[in-house]
Amino acid sequence: MVGDVVLDAPVDWTGENPGVYLKDDPEGEWITLGSFFRVFVSPHGPGTAMLLLASPGEASGSDTAPNVCITDNEPLARWLVNDFAANFGFFRGSPALSGLPYVALASAERGGGAVTTYSETVSGGGYDVRLDWRGVGEPFALVIPKDTSATGKHTILSLFVGAEGGTATLNGRQLPGEAVPHNAFGQQITSAFLAFSETWVRHD
Image (cartoon, rainbow, N blue to C red; front, side, top):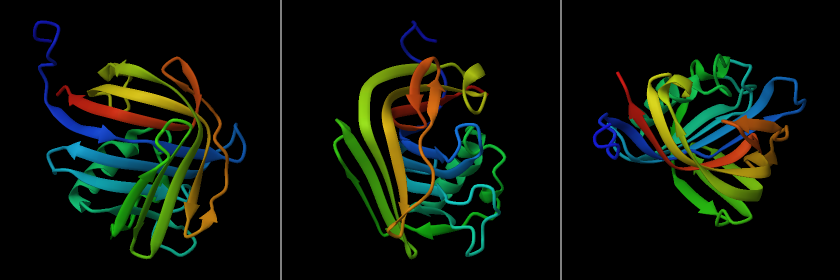
């Protein structure tokens, strides 16, 4: 810290990263994982990426495993998936991240205003993906020290907003699963939540 005001460390990226993570049994495995990134600053520049694992337990690359990342900046998206999302508890160890296809984004649109509902919709490469959040709650701010962050080497500054539930839709078909109770650093929300104003500060 410099004067307890400036974090004397490089910023890896800053932006938004809302997610919808679903199970059919609260004690079971994740069956649908959707994570949206809208990055404003990074070493790879700005960009958008929708990471959808409709079959998290299956390796990607087949028609039976519709897992995809849709992006307008593939180097950024690969970095976000490999260096960050792969360390998130929801995605850690998922076979679907191996061989994940990256396709070009054609359009992206947000909706809902994050007052009671919110949505992120992207299209590209023959995929239309929409994430929806309903029953949006009160925002709360977090400072997550590196020892408890997903990577173990970043301080994270973020604003989280819990939601009562969420859905993921692929090509007009709602994917299975429901949001389940989730403990976000002591705050009881669900596994469908918004993460805005998110900044990852690296400590080598």
